[in-house]
Image (cartoon, rainbow, N blue to C red; front, side):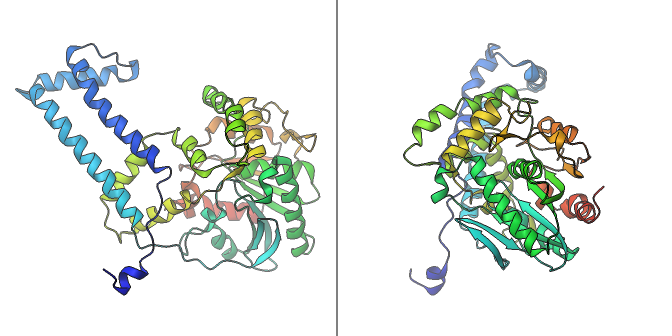
Length: 411
């Protein structure tokens, strides 16, 4: 079929990435349910203490119904097939959904290598320098015309300068100090464009560590800090998981030495390890939505951003794994940038620390430690998640408005 409609149709999406891992996780979960059934029926399945009470309750409920126990295997088979069908349907609908992000890009103020600084206007507004993580595209903060934190801030008289790191090319040799020094030069450009005014610096996730480093090393550029879901004490919560990530440094150094970067799908696999069945649950929900449902459109927009990640330069990746996750140098006051220790207790500027209450990516206690260390910190805990605090339906009311007020009049 060679109709014009078919020829103009955009190609299927790659995601959810890494697709093979998500399919394998789903298959293993469902097959394990069937494999465990005979053991459960004989009473030989070793339940964890957290699930033992629910398992006993289910067994009692089935035994109380005539014939229910005998019908249970067939019912389980039907339910697993239903979930598998919905999961695959959700993936297929996502991959072929007609939505594509269409947001006009803001003017380029400065560029060095692959790093750009975009000017969100208005001229004369309160200057705000926004720095995202190295491994995610900046436009989570400008996701859609009707869902854009940066454009909302512009409407409140705040002139945001957004850092777009992009994928590393010549930067494949960069360590974190190299990136932070480049970030300093971007900040200098923003200060110049603002007529010499110091900047409020907003750091999101990994970008928050960069923001703290800038405030510590260049206080002449920074008037205040706004830190969104920024990890700091990496062993304050789930230390075993953090140390496991730290142990990946040496294998990664060998595996990716010739490539010079850690690929996107490898990074996505690490995030998937936090909740291996998250993709299954969310694509099942998506399959049950009408394609033009606002919730479906929002899902596709967010999923596109999630699958549009950025590879991480190998030296920076190894530094993050070894020094942050493995050794918890920031939390111990031993993280150094260019040979200088970054000590938040000495960052004497007003700081807003936003700790999303349901964050699955940054453990709340890790981020809370930064709020406790900064001497002039105001801590806010919205009832949202790591990403939801900037794009969820309630984000404008719960986070955006309060953030704008604070940036214009920091406490």
